[in-house]
Length: 416
Image (cartoon, rainbow, N blue to C red; front, side):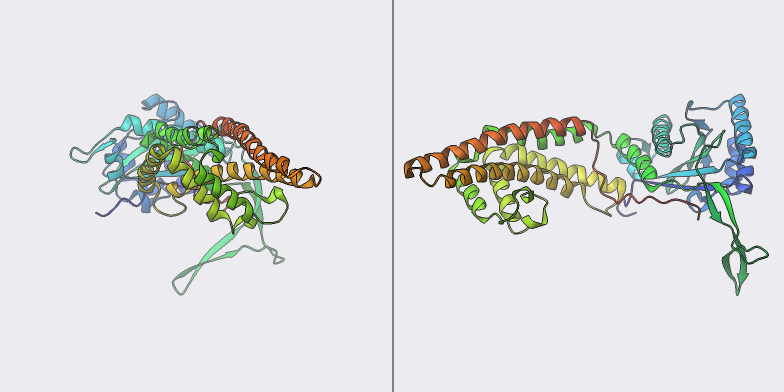
């Protein structure tokens, strides 16, 4: 069957209150699972995703895993009243690659048994995060798991009992067929003006959909502890301990430090920052110095770090696919950026004291030489304090980081 291209995909569409899909879904909320399965095409906006499901589970919601008959009737009433108040209905499909679920212990392909309780819990957390991102914490939704041969889907339908979505003016379109092609064009009034209508905003931001997907991946992989361990290696066991090994105490690293200082671009010292374009000519030297430092003082931790991010990268590629910046590259760049800026801060300090020393033209030569050595020691001491501050800041901001996001989050608005 090939490699796993993406372990989970999340898609969301919407329909207006007057849509037949909205009404059909309401009609089937309180029906038996077999009836909903047979008639899924009548209320579902995602026939291409749903295909021909072999089975549909009972409905669940953001508060319970199993809706009883009375619960389904109550939910039907909520959807009906939401429709009367002109709420949109959003339909979200979470599609899994069965092989990915199997690999992560949630599906037995032999018995075709799915850990439904876990899938419902994972879905609940993810959908609620997506709705929170859209400022729709007032929304109500129902979900059902659909089975078919290739992949398992979770279908979620969401409404606002009291519509609070932002309203915007949207062009109204009409459709007609010419030579077998369906043509869409704006409606116009008797005076030829394009007809517009104020409607609730339907599209979810891509960043909200991405947050839903990230939540699912993180819970399925259960890799928070592993991610935190990787971050601990970056910002703790390597960066935090760097001050214990001043560059000046190692002849090879000290020589590289001095050569780097001599090659620094002659510009405003505030521009001596690792990611500033003006540093392009010396970036390779900075990375080389960082690599030598890692291999000299943290070889074991560095090898462990590289192995961990490689394994984690493979897991994220299976979950998200291979598009975009890789987790492995991002984590390595994070490490080298932090170490590079620590080195550059040391160089800036060293530069200041070198300049001050050179300004003392009447100072005896032996005093200048001594001052040069003292300025290097002073720069190292400041580096120690700076690294400690950097670590504390990174720890507070990213202690609970579960993963890096490497795909661009594009915010879309309005109706299709």
